[in-house]
Image 1 (cartoon, rainbow, N blue to C red):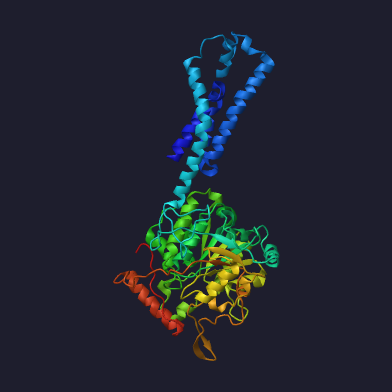
Image 2 (cartoon, rainbow, N blue to C red; image 1 turned 135 degrees about the vertical axis):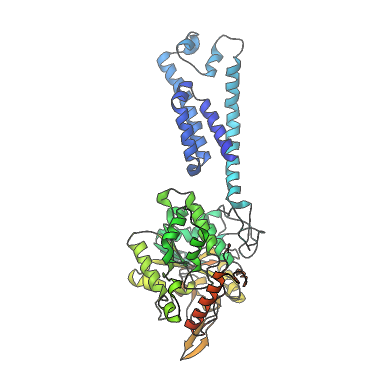
Length: 518
């Protein structure tokens, strides 16, 4: 509807141009309008046509006066060269011809309807971008961002409330100076930042100005975090800042299948589902299909050169050849594999990458001798990774008191909210109360539960450069019987037995995945 209406007014503008101009350029201009409307928007194109209309009539009239003279004193001039409707006013006639009256009425109508068309077109596009389905990041807040809201509701997510966005860049002048040095170009202000131009999405994207790699912590199975990532994809300019997305939940054995799917090719569901079903980790990729599907939709709107490539970060395990824990363990050097892939795709090709991976792979834990991903990358390229910790309240996230203290130091309870850590009061908080997911480690030869004590002596700014604050966690509910009795269900049981054997009881076997299609 919006497209046909804007096209109608554009054709109307073309019809008001001089006939000689129409004969030569109208068809070509209409073709350009049809081709460029999605990329530039109807507003700019209608403005161009209106400007062209003014130039053609006013400039031509001035030229005719200059070269021909006072045409109003020459009735015969209309036989020599076609003139404008208002040129007839000076001729000794009792009234204007009906066609000229219609033309004048159209010009008057034009100055009223074009602005209305522009407003209508903009509002319709906003609705099409997802205002039909509003949802909340934890709890209801006024929607402060003009960014995208998804077209289709995600299963299991609240359809009530609205989305509030914001970002904080420090609580003091000293903090603001410190963060400004780290992220050139970020709008620095008070912690109460609620304008659409200073929101959580912008905070994530602005980090690409100085970093080739922005690493976003993925709380596995959290629907709120998944929804944020999906909306991030649809932010204006995302494809201008990000070339690749590297996702933990993807088996690199099927990279060619994933490339074909992201390019818009016809890929059977069972074939593309193998990308997230067959990773080394069983049951941690239940929300991946939604994300992959949204990237594909974004790519459909982009020219080939701007399309986003999704890279599978998990080692290329072939479960048909895995029969024991020893076979599985061969593929467990996952961080080294991911670092090698990122070295090739980012630094050798000079590209920008958004990395989505579990926080333990991304945090800078100086007390942990294990070579996690960020440690491996920055060992060769110091300071090249901008790490964003995802913080949310809940049994697996932050304690209630820690979450409240963080919001107090930021001076806001808005979610989602982006905040820098370096040199800020928020960054100086003890890191341990913000990560309550269960972890078992061998301490002095004994299996020990270290939940809530993962980072002894470390603060938030020791682990990450910034945080993305979400509302209460909402873990995807898994139906344990979803694959019961199916060949894939039996395969999942086999894999769980292998993983339990390989983990030697360090953690319970993960639940089966929960894709949107069986």
